[in-house]
Amino acid sequence: MSSYKLDTLLADYGSKKIYRDGDKVIKLRDKGYPAPDVLSEAHNLAVVGETALKVPRLVEVTKIDGKWAVVWEYVEGTSLDKLMEKNKDKENQYLERFVDIQLDMHRHSATRLPLLIEKMERKIKSSELDSTARYEILGRLASMPKHTKLCHGDFTPGNIVITEKDEAYIIDWCHATQGNASADAAHTYLLFRLAGNADLADKYLSLFCKKSNTAKQYVEKWLSIVAASQLYRGKPEERELLLHWANVVEYS
Image (cartoon, rainbow, N blue to C red; front, top):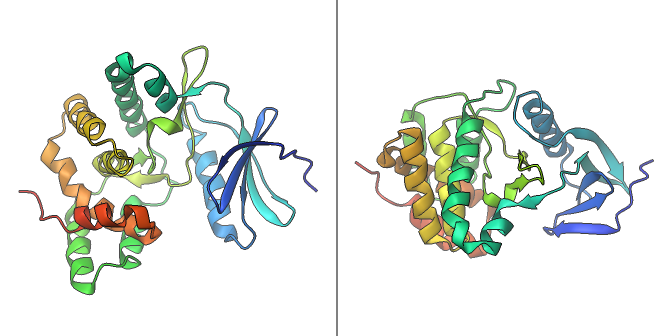
């Protein structure tokens, strides 16, 4: 039996709630949530924890009142998105650090993580796109270079925690894969756009390409693929923008 106290709610995402109990964080899923998905998230965190990156330490997978829960250590600090909101004059400085953290992450590999290309293929096949669009997008995906770099899959300033010692911890590894770093960057760009931060998205992409010595057109080639893979989530508020990006013509 779990003895965790669920008095301090950190976030409520509907089907999952995140609590803090002292030096522990508990991500509690709704009843009926698939066990393989819970175990997959725990596995990802355990695998990434073996790298030199600063990430929360996995504590355990358990059940609380019949609901699956993943427990990890609490990292005391302030998320990078809150720092950017609080210090508008330092936005460019924070964005530069954000990109540096992502590039450092991409230098690592984690061969026991799922392959990004296979995960995206499954999502695209489950999307609402018609068969012709799916065929075209899957063809683009198959033609892209295959890499095995550590990719976060949800790399946003909200998933970076800066401690009092100015250490940067990367959290929320449930979407982690091994794959192409530019696909990970395209996803981050799209997440900025979905959040309504078009200017910040453009600044981010320019900075990422400059620091990684990557042609912007190459990252842009991933945008339609990433957008199509995100349609499987079926969020109404994201549908129009994702369909727009999923149907854009391939960049030359």
